Amino acid sequence: MHEGLAPGARSTSVGSMRIGTLLVGMVVVAALGCGGSPLPPPPAPPAAPPVASSAPMPAAASTVPVEAVVPSALAKGVVDATDRSPEDRALDAGRHPGELLTFFGIGPGMRVGEIIAGGGYTTELLARTVGAEGRVYGQNNKFILDRFAQKPWSLRLAKPGNKNIVRVDRELEEPFPKDATNLDCVIDVLFYHDTVWMKTDRAKMNRAIFDALKPGGVYGIVDHSGRAGTETKEAESLHRIEERVVREEITAAGFRLESEASFLRNPNDTRDWSASPRVAAEKRGTSDRFVLKFVKVAK
Image (cartoon, rainbow, N blue to C red; front, side):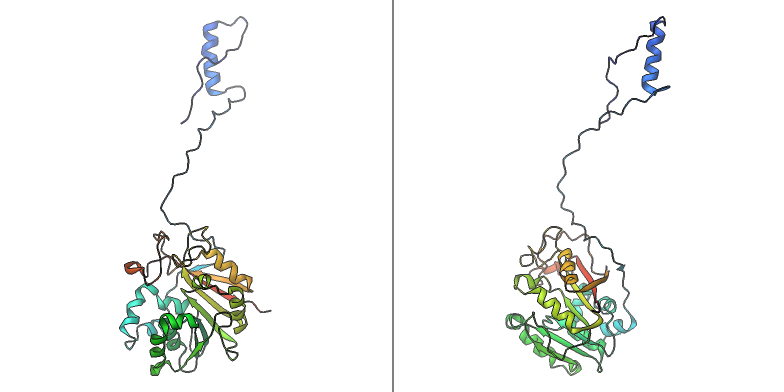
């Protein structure tokens, strides 16, 4: 609250001037500061204590372009294919696969790897996009296969249209076979946070992915946003990870962060609930997710 001048301010002697005139003049001078230095401003009121808020924490500051992606004609055709399963198509609204394929630059004839393919929702989209001349290395580790992916993954690979998918059963520290070299792209969709509670050596995993990519190859990451300051603390409980951590770990492996996309951002997400598809229920597909495109820098 702004405070005025205190009553009873001191006056100045003026010799033979009339006291009434002096008092009026001094009030004017004190108020306006005419003919001399202005009075210093009153002290600012004390700051109010911070108010707790349930609003979502802001996304990590970015110094790279943020792209609003429009699906290419190729990606739109892949997603709209009528022979895709109803179960897969039901996930599209929350996953935006057309934007994902376009942003990471997936195209015909490419050699692509996927970290933890799970049941293969994204893997099949990749396979359809790269076509018969391309190849997709779909990797799962023993834990994921034993836990839930063995049956749906095997059924996925049995589809005639997925013959260009190479099944890779390997641990995350060495995710691809020796012949999987000069890859155009490796993607990790909604799984990087799980490598935390699975005790994966992420530095070793990221270096192995770096080595599998060709110079200029893309390492694409999609994951659920954790609140600022949580780092990896909620990777298992809420299935989220702080974006800053992912950026730092992957750039430490030699990658350059080239750009990010906004198509999975949700500023209304409070980030305090579990994004696991097993417990998210009606919130599934509504979490704030960061989409990052890293590029292998030639040595």
